Length: 210
Image (cartoon, rainbow, N blue to C red; front, side):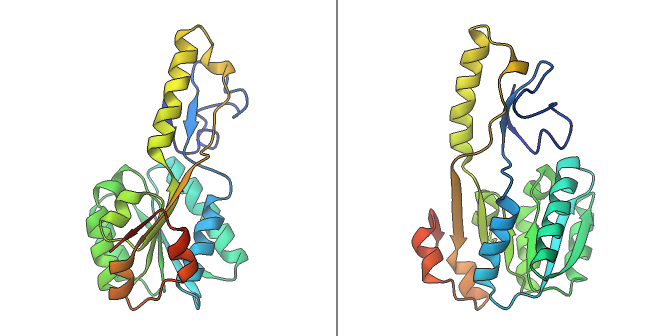
């Protein structure tokens, strides 16, 4: 059983979300409209946004799938899109310093998570507002994140464990998607970048870091 999985259907971990098949089930941290929602939020923070860079670890299949979805949604909004394809930590600095974009969308995976301070530092030096999917990345200096509430996912995972211990077959238990999401804004980073966060976003944010 998996407590959190990045796009288990797209990566082939399960046959379908409704009937996973095999001997595995659990919770996905992806919802179908998250990428579009993050882009919507980013455009509110950067209202004249025209060009977007997307950073993803192309050695991580789920990150590749997410990058493709972001590119599609961004182009529907008329944004110019460029990508930073990384495979190791050494690729990060050269990718960011070579950018000519107005914002950076960071696709999270273990490589990105372990280098989140370096990514945010380099993005700040390049005057790039950053969008993330994980609260930790914003606590490390990123601008904004919108994503699943992981404590809620882990609590729900306990229900799966209980069902399986009581005899349910994992392959018959549907994979669930997130139902609770967090919007976190780093106001300190916003002020340092000269950005005015709309009052509407500050009012609905789950956490504002000052």
